Length: 553
Ligand SMILES: Cc1cc2nc3c(=O)[nH]c(=O)nc-3n(C[C@H](O)[C@H](O)[C@H](O)COP(=O)(O)OP(=O)(O)OC[C@H]3O[C@@H](n4cnc5c(N)ncnc54)[C@H](O)[C@@H]3O)c2cc1C
Image (cartoon, rainbow, N blue to C red; front, side, top):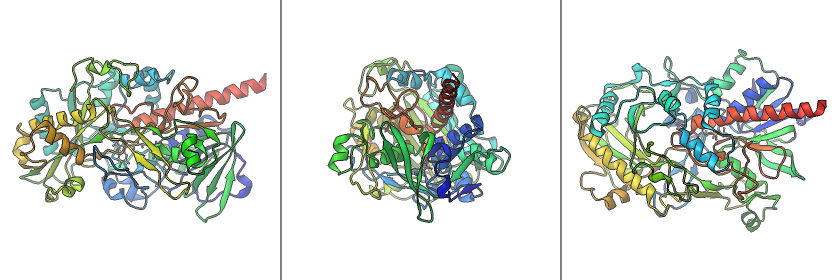
């Protein structure tokens, strides 16, 4: 069972303490409890349990969770080149963002791992990562036939003929076999149970079997509604964590072996900065004592921004035949083959991306008018809207997360610096996607569903006007990453963790979440987070065995 309480007498009884029971944290906790039955594991989650909570478990309810009581609801700083009104949902519940996201599930491309290695992530090869992904317990599968409505099927066929791209029946199979996607359209793979429409989140797949007693893990304690406020350091080791329990009482928990931060790409750097682990100038300017100068904490902030083009339909979207309203997508190639090999700040060693996809689009069968209404575009009748959302799979803009106050209650600043890359690559990708979307809309059978284009509307045609519109209504698909990135900590001063995910300069602290990505992968990142967590558990066990071996000698 989960608990909201640990007695004072137990605070030094755990070998591994995991901060954050989110997407990565659930995997790490469950695997360590399984692989190391003699060790005691404590998983600390700020939010409540998702067990038996239908608000969370029913995938179709995902939109209702955003901005609610289970959402940290971060904001962006002003974005002169983009949309300053984007809100970044982050889940505060067991399972983390895998408990309120859309569970679209893609394996990363071989290129994504190649570029990670070029940035110092030694050993993170494509075959190694695929092996880790083969262990995932989530039920990932292409959208079931009963969730494929005629509108979406017609859209897929029109994409294929209008853009001359193949229909791909299983994106992940294709990626596993060929290392990437080039061009193509198809139904997504989703981590869910098609029989009841419930999530197969990290919590459902890894923790619920333990809560139900199917997997016996007496060595795992899951502490919910507990907030870790500070990492305490003594010498080159974490000595304890300061936390507050639901009833307001305080605890100092000490891990006998390791502390593992899995609080996500926003809250892990936030916690580190508040603990004095970060860039010394920032910490000193806020009066936070510098415990370790780690310049990369909060740097390298990345996201997958996307824009939106919206149509009113002349007949209603078929009801109740969808996983979560975004069932299919397209992959395209904009740049000439090999152009991505040019060195840039995002790709300093010029790793060649060949001719793999560099534009993506989701489709949405709901009116996503939040940002268009603000610019004066009309509302669309519920059930009569269709959106295509051009997305930048390998964005080149880089942002930064930083504290604006030493007060732990003040949220950190998230400055994504959207569309600021000097080559204008990111903005050009959106314009290309907008034009491709319009081509699809001219093609039957999808064309026959359409009444008219609502936003940006047929008057917006030039590259300049399309770019302006696309950037001002841009939204996020909630993929912040890279803020505590992995790299060669001996040569790269902005690398926060090494290839074993150990924090520079500290012996017993690792990070396992989306923050460690050296670059954001081409595809939706949840499966990559799950894979990082599977691999992290293996690395931790290897170190534990090596320690035992040394003790025996
Ligand atoms: C609305 C939405 C839709 C998305 N859709 C998709 C999708 O369809 N496909 C996809 O691939 N990706 C999607 N993503 C992105 C994906 O879900 C995330 O990248 C991924 O889940 C992040 O995992 P994580 O382990 O890094 O962090 P999280 O899952 O966010 O886990 C962090 C956990 O740490 C806890 N925590 C934080 N601070 C503390 C603290 N101080 N003390 C204790 N606990 C703490 C949090 O409560 C949370 O449970 C979506 C994200 C969102 C928000």
